[in-house]
Amino acid sequence: MKRNKKTLYTIILILVVIIISLSIAFAALSTTLIVNFASVNQNAYTWNVQFDTGTTNVAPTKNSTNQSSNFTCDNATVSASSVTVSNVKLSKPGDYCIWAFKVDNYGTMPAKLTNISSSKAGTGSCTTSGATITCGCVTFKLAKNTAGSTLVTTSNTSLAAGSSTTPTQLQLYLRADYTPTTVAQVNACAAQTNTNLTYTLTWGTN
Amino acid sequence: MKNNKSLYIIVGILIISLITLSIAFAALSTNLNINFGNVNQSAQTWNVAFTGSSVAGTASGSASTAGRSCGTATVTATQVNVGDTQLSKPDDKCQWVLTVKNNGSISAKLSTITANKGNNTCNIGGTTGSQTSMVCGNITYTLTSDGTTALPINTSLAANATQTVYVTAKYTGTSVNTTAVTQSGLSFVLGYTQN
Image 1 (tube, each protein chain N blue to C red):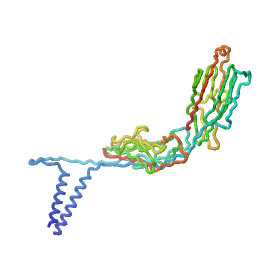
Image 2: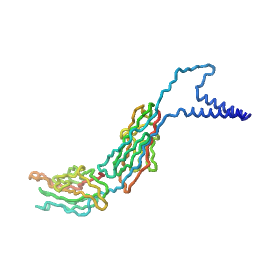
Image 3: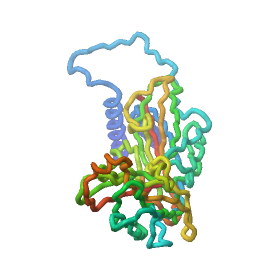
Image 4: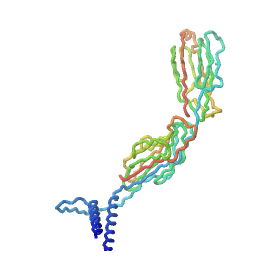
């Protein structure tokens, strides 16, 4: 009796094992490959690009000869985000005004000019192209030198990283010129008033 | 006695189950013979693995390299460990180009891609079983086949064939952190199976 029972138990066990083996015999071959990242660190940075406000009322350099009532170059009012010149009147060859101002980088990231655009939203007839605005016989230029020959562009205008206490600085010049040089050109200039001329400088990470 | 009877019943059931698993259902009253000539089993191998021992990361992005460095990826047959990496400002990017090879004789396929975010707060992209991207704050991690196209699953990897896997970590945020941030414990798991 006991031997028969043992034999039976053995048979059952064998059958169970066979069934289980058959059930799992068809599992697919497989391999697991893993891509681990140790650590990805993001350093702390600050971003702060603005106009220098050391002097908020900037007097222009202007042609000092033959000034008359037809010549006006107001001071520029400077804030962290804007430089505003209220009135400019140039009427004869040689008339010009130059306002000097700076851009500060108080952030810890280097910055570059990613876009410069100019526009005229008010009255008058002007053409705009990047750093140059031409309104009749007066041309405005945003430049990196007083002569206005090195215009501000996205490829030549950047600022190294600064700090919250000591910014890096970039000197810029806004120059307005009465452009006609001959009598014929002067006589062809019609009087006009242009308003709401704007330069927009967009800064991004370098 | 009664126990023996139970045991016999169990044995009978098990035998029936075994037969059911093993052979087709035979005809009711006719004997059909299926004869085999030779049944041959060729010798086959299964071996899908990363190749190489290390891969340098390629950095790109903004002109300034400040706060950007790409760790070296250490490669073993089944695991790639990407070393410490720094990405700190918009557009900073590191990329590692890995190679998976089917060194065996059995065709394989990439069946599943699983993204593990560890303890980080991430949005996992893709679909279940094909999670090819993770967006974790300012950093996006991706697996692609060419740097751009999400790594596809269910494509065949024949014997001796290779599959290129681009692993990319990129600073996709639009602002910078005012305090340092560290992400760790992230991984992608690639499941290759028989094709």
